[in-house]
Length: 172
Image (cartoon, rainbow, N blue to C red; front, side, top):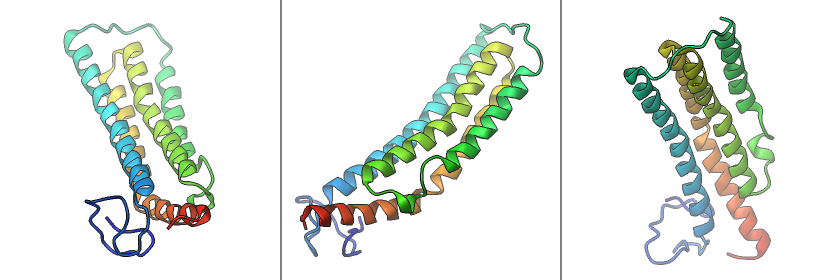
């Protein structure tokens, strides 16, 4: 791990402080691990939706409803708009003042992106069309990649906020 304060690589084995500068690493490390875990959980949930749809499709459980043909296209527009909204939700990372705010913005962005996969499951149940589900799943995965590509910047900002929060409390 890289210490956010002295920017030196450290191994945190005995305690939660950087051996070089004494910076408390535990709050930073916990937030970073939480963000990585949430990112993985959102991706894993889309895989679970895929498994669910696979079993529904192979068992022939779902029967298509008589819906207007425009319904999947409207849902597709909603899913694509969600991707755009996910990129713009919340203030820019540089304007966030706490690690908790940074984590909340990340969580909302990932949830908006995952909504495309959920919408895909709903459209599959309504239409029994596997190609529609795959389309929504692909949109969700593209969104996960876009939000995930911000992880280096997010980690850097998290480190800056960890140093700011610690110095404002008077800790090392």
